[in-house]
Length: 506
RNA sequence: GCUCGUGUAGUGUAGUUCGGUCCAUCAUGACGGACUCUCGAUCCGUCGACCCGGGUUCAAAUCCCGGCACGAGCACCA
Image (cartoon, rainbow, N blue to C red; front, side):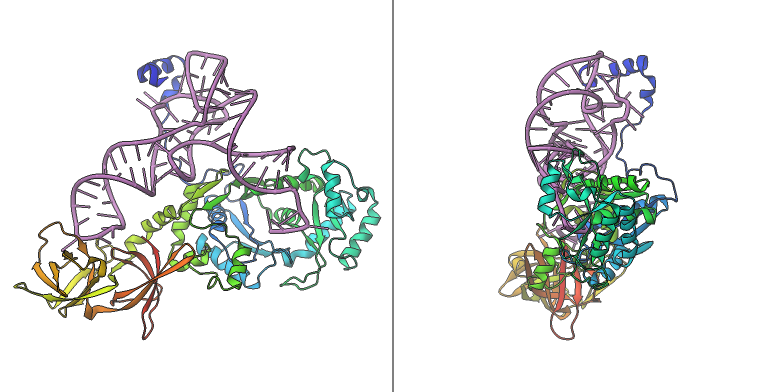
């Protein structure tokens, strides 16, 4: 309306019909996460439930960031729960439990409030299964998966469904005693068989697994499936809000049916959509585990991998990762994001903390020719151009300098020093002050340089550039900005041999 | 196929509950400029979107109907 009749006409119409609309604020971007439904300050309990079949990936970061941020907003708690009830398809990795606890703390900025392992709480789940059987809202099904599926799709009950509680209980004992082989029986939750969504009809709650569990061995022959274990545990922990991927929407529906049987109230569910990161293709924890095993990658923190361990090693700041995911918010849209955006968040946090250093790749040596100008014995260059990091780097001049091969021709300006012209391996000084608009390049006196290697992950490749690095106050694990190259983390400074650096981003 | 969900600039978001200062927010990006002795940072400017078609209404991103597109689930994985 405003476009056709003008703003004034809108104003008049509003004054006549809807005066309060005039009071509205110009729209603004909401900041932070949107409020949680039905949340009471101080009483919110959330949970983050990864499978410990490997360390956390960038995708898990959304779960950590979102849950911990909500806990912070509502002065609530986060339960870190290891959903390790599968021993064959995605078997747990013993080391992963500790890794994940540490990674959670790194990313959230504080440890999880409560940490539990499903495998240590098996008696509780088995007990609830017994109650379910006794209550008659669950049954032991002896059909094969294929037989059951055919029946289920036709909304037909299988013959096991109507058996007596006593029969179910005796089969249940047989299952737990290891007298039935894997696949010979499963415990199902009774639901309405006319449910429109076939996936929900009499869904499986526990199955037989004879493969030993890496943490608790062969103590248990029957293990709960995610939908059952998670449902019971959420209730026991008093979880008020479940934030999870929307691929688990059917899980919510299945679990709600189970809660009705038990007479419990289901927590408030919230969902996020699928996230794809352009730079990383189809990585899954299992596929990475396999590729590392085959030697394709050097380890979980290989810089080419989308693991938190790799991002952390490269120098991503946990605050930046958190800011990024919180800015993204919680939406059910399936999205594709770019590392560029995450890098931008990271730059804004680390730029002011990182000292500058010169790294000359493919170095060319030039002899300085004073030609009437005075070459100082030392040169002081700022550690940070804006003075965010105080102090200077003192360069001893020895008459010999190193410049990047790509810069070593014609007339250039040596940053913070002099205009030169290059001829026959010599750098002839033309002016100490800047005299024209020629390109400014980074350089170092050869006396200040030591060999270094910079590794840059590019897709599946790890490109290595060799060169000479300014040898001033180098510290292992620190992040510096290499002038005209980008941010890099110093990995190691050996006694002899080149300094190893890992490229972070531009 | 069945079930469920989602459609706002290149990307990601705000606004949709309860129609109106919405010619639509912010960030990122691209492009241009200023400044800075880095290709970094900072500052300024420009570009760019309500999936489509109907309907209701003085007024629709918002409500209704119908399409279309995309995604997920339909595992004795999580």
